[in-house]
Image (cartoon, rainbow, N blue to C red; front, side, top):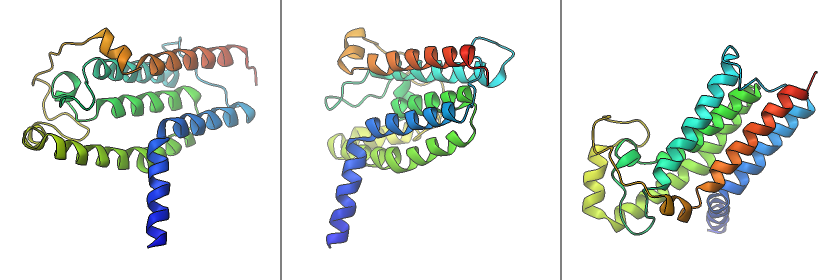
Length: 198
């Protein structure tokens, strides 16, 4: 019984602090790569495959998160249009795409394993917990929504993609933090690429 309560406490701690822990772990990976002289790929050179496509993934992830954050009204209504008509978790998918993009830019393939472990330990349990709460709160609407969407990949690209995006809602959901963090990280990786000559 005590073991179960300890596991539950640890699990709750990880879920509550997943964003901080993810940021901390990813920052450690970048610092380790700089220390071991892994030079980031060039994000401004279209011929640098990993740098350029890493940038595209980061920007696509930021755009997907921003689109979702400008629509969702957390704890008030079930979001089923816009990116939520394509996947049930566009915010998490956007974050995953951003993380993969940064891994490509940094140029250390081992970092993708870190991203996968973080996704499995922190985000998959959070997704399950959120879906359970949504099923309790929006029972019939949630059942219909489950039939229209998959967890990650779109069932269709033609359903209810139109949505009323709101800058005020984007701000209310504090999505500017992810946007600003991504821009700062890209800028720093570009500077490291330009001025590191190892």
